[in-house]
Length: 332
Length: 269
Image (tube, rainbow over all chains, first blue to last red; front, side, top):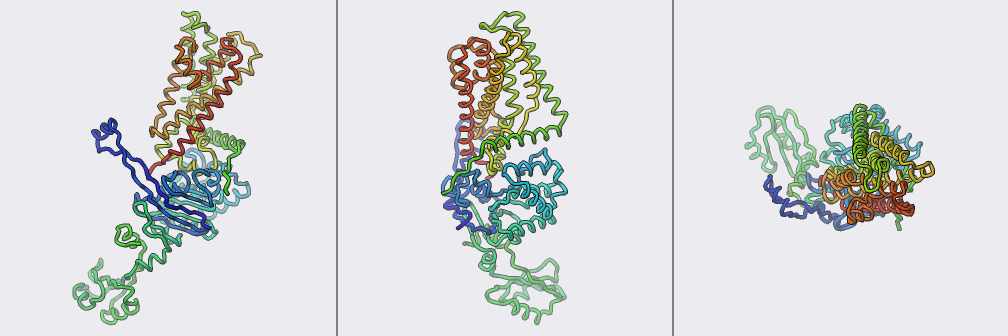
């Protein structure tokens, strides 16, 4: 049975329809006009317990609105949501015990209180026992180095510390379903790595995770399944491996030749491949269709005839695929 | 079948007080702000005191109310307003929270949103308001010759006044769920109305105003009705109306807030 199920989920907002500038504002004051804007358009989504799902899409695609619908913050205009069999909006209190939420762009810490005080307030709100609280804080400390800034006021934390503290707040009650909306936004590489390792651990422990992020490394390192949303509708829903296998139809080899590369001549000599000049004069990139040629075949023919000084293989990038999905170059 | 899980009242109170005390700890981070605000509230009430003293130096009574009874009216209103700021100032932030999407996290926690918002801020000017308001009330009480026997009614009047005031302010601040403004304009209007009109005996106003203040927006039950009963201007039967006004106001506030949360559309979509 799915832990989360959304059917025909739709959210429409009413927005003021006004011209720009002072004149537009005054005119709107006299003649109020609105138009409807559909942020989420008939989404069907089903998540099984223990799954880790990346929910990605370009800015304004409807990711955050979907998360708000799934967490009960917003009421759907149409369609239904069930989280562990409950409507998260009408059964808000019961649902709150089972979910953890983090919005990367906002904090739920009490601004003028030490981190420890915020966590204790949430402990009491969720009714977490002293023993469970102690055990979880020890675990967070071990994985997120929470201890170093537990006594610090929230307003004095760095962004990385704030995000780690917020993650602890979202997980203090050991929720079964966790929604993380851009948890690594604005963080440096080392903090991102630490957070990703923590999230992997969380998934390994059986927590169900829905993660939205613009950082595709978050997705590849933490999630098995990816849902791509664009203009409020799902453009792709499946495993990351299948996405790669289905949409990545070419591979590339970078060659470093002894002398300057003559791209037109090489293209004439090897017409089955696509050639492009690299950053250095002696560097050239060869792109080939992975369905027609094996990498061994390509490397064999190139090394035999060109004797490159060095070469490297370009790994297929999920980022390119998603970029092309956003651009509408690929279809479901 | 899934049952809706209600939050036990004891748990709600515990959450409220923990959050409130946490705010107190946060406030002492800014000691200068604390003292300036507390002093401002006190100065405001001293001015009220002085105004009434000057007024009654020239006018023997207003619609049958003497100086000490008028002090009780002003004092009880100040205590009610001060309690609103001291214990429930967060309600005033409703509009800002709606505009900025700051209600989001509060919806995802297992506690009533209205409790989390109401306890999210403490107005420090309220200390001066409560202290000097109470002093005016007690001074008026003694001056009006009301004995100790009526003290339980006085205590009930203060508690009910604070509850009605908080509930009415909350209901009016919740209008911002729909009008999407940061300023709680309707709640400000209520405070202005009370500051200008409810420090006077209701008898000086036309009957239409009296009916509105008694039954439509029951501001008269904050200070006028209890002080009238205590001083004998109204019969003791009116005492029953005070808890009824509390229940009505609280139900109104909770109902409007719930409807507001249904209309809430967060920020950034």
